[in-house]
Length: 288
Ligand SMILES: [Zn+2]
Image 1 (cartoon, rainbow, N blue to C red):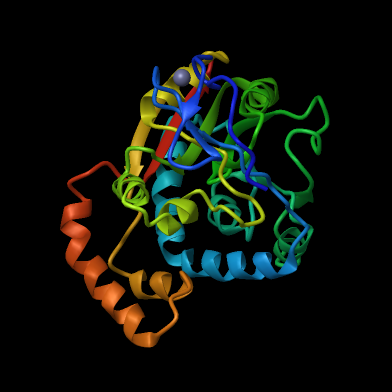
Image 2 (tube, helix red, strand yellow):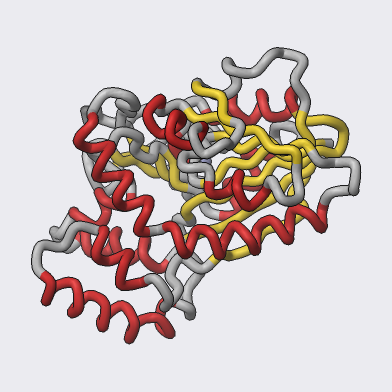
C-alpha cells in the first residue's frame, strides 16, 4: 500500500524529494509534504470500527471547535448566504451544529457512516465530492473538516468548490498543520527511530490516510491560485484538558496504567504545547 513517492509539489510544482519514510516526500521550496498512501474506503470493516472509536473519542473537542468555527463563518456571511455544504460530514456533528444557523447538506463517501448519520435525520448524500452534486448546484459556504488532506487530486477538488460556490462564497478548510507541535515532535521521533507517532498522524494503514500536510503559507498559495482570497486563518486547540482522558483511551494503549501515565504527561505538557503553533489550522477563503 505504501508506494515510493515521486512527482512534483501540488503547490509550487518543484520536484519533491524523499522525506521521513519511503512513502513520504517533501518540497524543499515551499515546505509542502505529501504521502503515497492509498485510501480503501468501504473496504475494511475492522479498520473502520477502530477509526469510529477514535472519532467518538474526539467528539467533545470537535464539538467545541465546531461551535467556535461556526461563529467565525457566520460573521463572514451575509444574512442571505445560508446554503452550506459539508464535504466528508462523517457522523454529522458539524451538520448538527450548523443546521441551527444554515440550510445544510452533507456528503459522505463511507456508506456505513453515511447511513447512520442519515438515520439521525440529517441531510446526507452518499458519494464523493463533486460527482455526487448536480452541475448547477450552488452553495454559499463549502466546508472541509479534516477532509481536504485526504483527497489525492486536491487541485481538482478546489476548482470544483469554485464552480459550486455562489458570488462571494466561502471555502472553509479545517486541517492539520505541518508546523504544529505534535507533528514536529512525531517527525523528530521518527528520525530517532520511533516511527509509530509519525505513521499515526498520517493515518497510515487506516481506510482513509492523509496524503497532504500543509502549513498556512503553502495552503494559502495553493488555494489563491484557484481564484480565492484568504479572509481568515485561525488556530483551533488540538488538545483541551477536558476530554483528554477519553482521547488517550481511544488511541489504543494496552494497559490502564499506561493510559493514566500518558494522561498526566499530556496534562503537564499542555503549557509547552501552547508555545508552538496549533496542530489544527482553519483557513477561510472567499471566491473572487
Ligand atoms: Zn512546493
